[in-house]
Length: 455
Length: 80
Image (tube, rainbow over all chains, first blue to last red; front, side, top):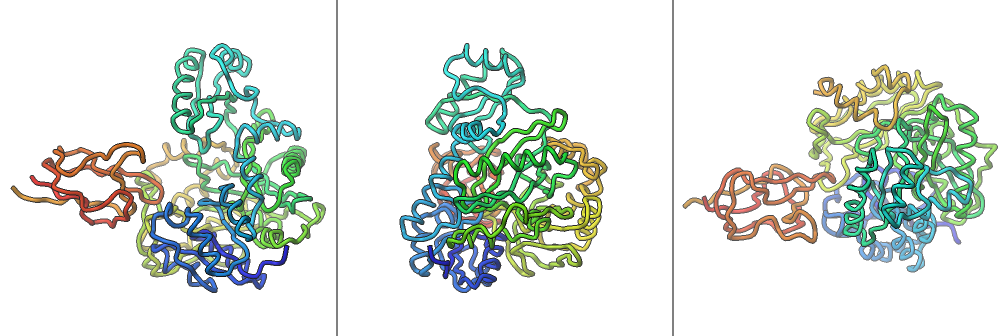
């Protein structure tokens, strides 16, 4: 493979800006695709060139493989970066990019397909010696089998669709009667949604933390860049992320990161990837849940604690370079926190709030980074994700990082829209957040108890 | 007989059906009552039902399925 000369950015928003910055530092020409709703976007302004790929609706623009490949031809791009979301984990897209003679910045379509199949990913993990959530061996065929497996696992158990994803078709059952009642429903729903009524069972891990490991691979070697703590979630969407997972015992951290490398090596992983785990603090057990075969929203916290530019590394690997990092060179220093700033009104059930940014004051000073596509006067369109940007801080330790985050949030001003800045200020003050006493259900409980703080 | 318009309170993408395979909520010529859902607006990946504020008979929809919509834009004309 030859080094990349022209990179097409098949995404929008803050991640498009992030990719343009990384490519420009590498001397690579950038071409930004945009929908009719994004002609004034920061990414379009910053890129060397831009190509209109269709109307505002994502299905007709950012999700259109044909439109994006046509743009790549028109721009004479030799590589495509998918960012996250949209087509980033679409194996057919990765295949189509390569079939068109272009470089896909990420793993091959076959690896995306493999890790996207939840049952297959579980099997690969088990074979690589990586713990998975206890459950049935593959699919459940008969009601008697479901009862036996559920009794062995211990209630509550989760019924999941074998072909499912994104939390769809999941049911939690607390006893045998519920299992008998809900399993047929789940099967019918899975059949309707995915054309496959196959089910499997998994034990419910109560009070788990979400901890994930960042890896980089070049198709031969894989290194890890330590872990992130992402337990503060609302409706399975991460809200506040940290690196490292403070208070994780060193011995657990070492095993977790080694497991992530083993699993990525088992599929000869190429590019940046993340292995997500549930961690049970009480028993100190961790379980692999899934792999994301792309750059993630929260990658900057890893960049802050390791000093490694993940987007730069993934572009270099895509251009055919070997991993320049050895595991022993990678260190985790200090602590980093990211707050996702969304155009949503936390006081009104997180109602989306698109509109014009009439005034903007961005926090600064030591250890503060803001990854965003905002500028004063920008009209945030209603058609896409509500993420406006990510405020990321670094400091020597977690307590100092929280103090710095609180200071930075206090400087922030976004006028014209409702945002989640106030929510993050309240979280930064919260005693449980400060004590790292939380699990994946914490934030939803907290929101119920603290709605008055958000008005 | 007067003609009134149902206005979208939200910007985003307008849908006339609850799911891609389902029939439309309402069609031209249909009778509607106050509170009936006539469509969905998708704003930043979240879906919001649009309800008629008054009853009557739909003369015609002014916007197609899956089209972009602005806040304040008329969705349908209703004979009241």
